[in-house]
Amino acid sequence: MQYHKWCKEYNTDILYLNIAGNDIIVLDTSKVAADLLETRSSLYSGRPYFTMITDLMGCDWHIGALTYGTRWRNHRRVMHHSFHSTAVKQFRPYIIKATRNFLKRLLDDPDPLNIIHHIRHMAGDTILSIAYGLEIQQENDPHLKRSEAVVHALTTAAVPGAFLVDALPILRYVPAWFPGASFQQKAREWREAIRQTLEIPYAEAKKETESGKHTISMVSASLQKIEEGTKDDAFTEEIIRNTAGSLFTAGSDTTVSAIASCILGLLEYPEVLKKAQAQIDTVVKPGQLPDLEDEPSLPYITAIVNETLRWRDVAPIAIPHLLTAEDEYRGYRLPAGAIIVPNVWAMLHDETVYPDPFTFNPDRFISPETGQVDLTRTRDPAHACWGFGRRVCPGRYMAFSAVWLAIASLITVFDIEKAKEKVKIVGEDGIEREEERTVELTHEYISSIAV
Image (tube, rainbow, N blue to C red; front, side, top):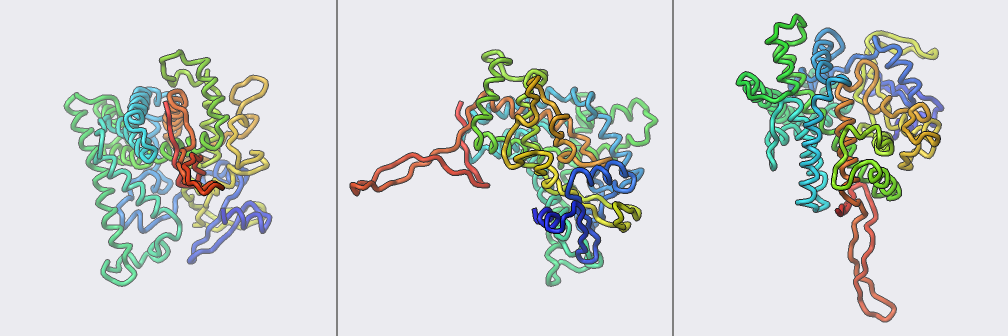
């Protein structure tokens, strides 16, 4: 939000900063992001080099960290093979199964404090099945625990300026015992978690594939192409392993954040929940659950998902891009090597595009004439929340389907209400009584879910 405040103060939508000798350019509106990251994507598709992530943490294989070029394109091609808009439908049974298991876990353990845990388990179940064809353990799954540790490590280290070693790469040679070099110990711990997350599930999936006992997954489908003698040099075991690891460590966090944000929106705006339940009642037969095939018939659920992605965007600041050659824009000289920071939060809360942007209002995406989702009426938040240009998230279709089904299923099965708490009140007569009050929502909200 500070970037946006500075842009407002200086009446600009493109902001230049110099931090520790690094040129940083903040893009504050969808217009400037489209002009640069989309129209001029050949110049703006690079990634900054993070010494901490690449050299010290050993994450030079992750598709999100790869610099733009042949190696990145090969990884992207393997990912696209399994996750383009048509191919992703083959994984719908995994999404459905994980969602049904999620509902059962909520019924068995409705403790509000465990809701996020259940959402994480569902997201991990989905990604582990799709990437590797592996079954998740009901509790304390080792693959999931390692993946969550890696996600935390990468999101921490990817913030520009988080570690001085990124600005002064020579510091990577400083020993861990040296004062101020605690980053070395962190890197060592994270490096081992990253190695295990990359290698262990892939080895298990490869073994299953070779034994013929595998189910369809990104790994099994890609290894099958090698066995069939594909001439596409992108399909090597190393790239397949790297791509699966990238999916596993990046795919679940979006789902978790989106579903949690949607629950918060439904708690704050109960009229949205009631309207969604009314539409579901007209489409889904009693005693049945919504299916992904129902999406065209449930436009209000789709609008809720779109509004969730806009209202509480998963990544307020997108992963930085790198300008690979000097450029000029609106009379500004943009230096080669500049780090480009898309301010997604500002784009998705632009009042000129989304009136009353801080209100959770799915109807902004619904045509009053047809009752259907109309993304020509209000701009699709996908233009910002899934990344930009050639770096757009390759798993966006799968992620949207997973979030859509989870939200539709929650709304079908449960009422979602603010939690109640009992407080002691001393009346005018001096007698102490207990009174039930609604808990006010904070960032660390607690909700109750009732069947």
